Length: 219
Image 1 (cartoon, rainbow, N blue to C red):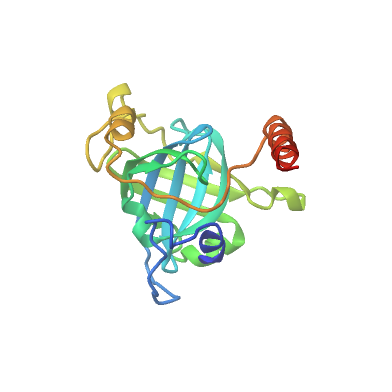
Image 2: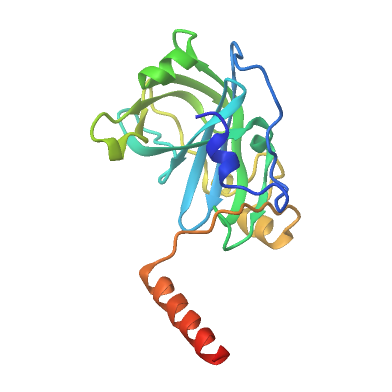
């Protein structure tokens, strides 16, 4: 996926988001991961693995599963530049992904078999996470099926159970110690993209009415 989709959704003349530095295409032993808590249209978690010079990324609507055998949906999204792993702040409303972003967890990961790129291509990544909150085994498995599900995966809790973070840690950044509310109020970092959020039928209808009124007033 590289960064083509990421760059296509953003105008770097208007946004402070990193465009991505040129890095070697093959990075052996990629090991960093980050999980960003993202309160956009719906609260979810962005799970990112450093691989091939970018962050391979999945949106987890329900976050990580913690009990052995549990599985949650993981939707593959566009690759992000490595610099994105450190971002915590605000994406303004009306922009793609508008909302509050927290660095929820980060650390190193290991893929069984030591071939992360091959495992990704084959659609199964058996991971060991060594983070500040997530420690243990998880497995990402691509859902096989129709074309409209090609970006859908499952993240399964494999190995033993892992203790979920406490209520306090659940809403605490590993980067700054702040809560989501504190990050939103501080507004000390704002990134924008030029991709408009998806409009609902109601908003489209209202937009047509405004346009019609505008045209009528010019006559």
